[in-house]
Length: 236
Figure 1 (cartoon, rainbow, N blue to C red):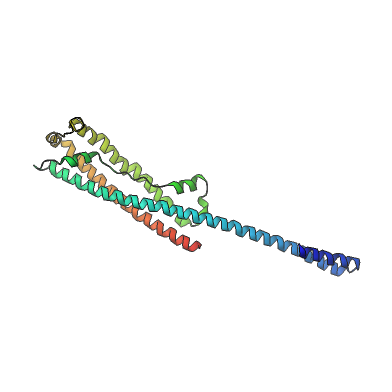
Figure 2 (figure 1 turned 180 degrees about the vertical axis):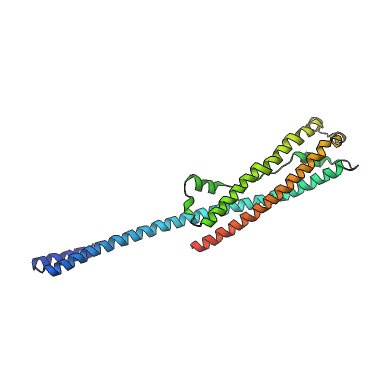
């Protein structure tokens, strides 16, 4: 503003002195000054917008990393439990194919199953709010989408198959054995049921497949966490 007043004062002085050539030069200088001021203001505003977008991206990336860290921890817990469950199924299989008496403790594990539930709060928020474009790395976005698509496929595939097998196959077998009625299991009746051995072997197959799929997702989640860390370092 001071510069504009300064030029205006000079311009009026030149007009009063009838120095038109110099007047036009100062008028052009005044116009250029205004244009430069506008450009600087636009540049500052653009810088502020980019800074806001950058800060928003950093917040979302940190939240994604937190969600994935939760997933990694949960995958690890379920894989440990699945390994123990798989061992119990093997013991039951051995009991059905030999003269060894079935272990009552393992019988109830026929209906046991673990299902992974991903922490999707951040990715869901990004999609529902239309903010996914805040993440500038297309490679990272595609990898994140691939991870969550696979989570959904596993949930609707192997996880659902294990739940159905527990509910529809082993549930009726245990109920018919009298366990829930008398707190005792007719182990000899269970051993005579030929479908039980087939069902146990099928559950072992499903558990083994679940372990492999979860391990793959466990590795991918860890890779994504590292990719996000690298992206945050690049942004900084």
